[in-house]
Image (cartoon, rainbow, N blue to C red):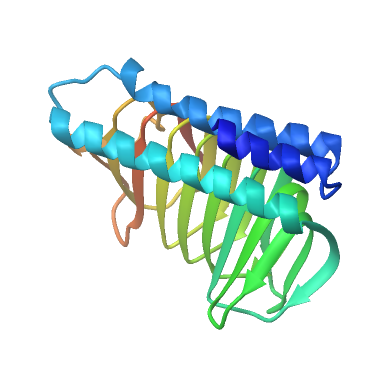
Length: 250
């Protein structure tokens, strides 16, 4: 951690980032590395084999820490303010949110539009955004979306295909229709609102709190089902934080 902070301070000294940006990056790095202590606080139950749980926790923490440090340094060197950015449609949109307020929504326009502080890269099948603050991204309906949230307040609204959401911290509110969704929550508050449709939900709970509507039926350990028919699938792994699922009428 100390070596990474030195790199941020060097960027500040060279005039590549402002004091405010340096402060934000150092805070993000310290918060990410503090997550290494969290596994010590987890209380194991008979539902989990010790070896598997330790492996899951270590892998998740390592990925989150590495991602936050790598993203913070990269953004510090290359970030810009993008206004009214227009990009061609792609199958997958990936976004890493380091802090601040960010909003991702779907629209009928096939083009991707974006206004944000940060940077981005394109490939044939995907666009990758890194958002420092004040991010507004609009994507085509039915797109696959992958979002990593390391801090800040994030709103995700609209219609999507497959979704992959990793949450290290911050407050996240989803109001979405989806095909299937994978959620990996290490910390933070996640409120998930979705239409009242049949859902099959696989849950791996190591820590944190989960709140589901009373209509859900527990089929077996870690498996919950609501309704009958063609199920939408949710895979949830939660190591810490709060998760709440809420139905809304269409």
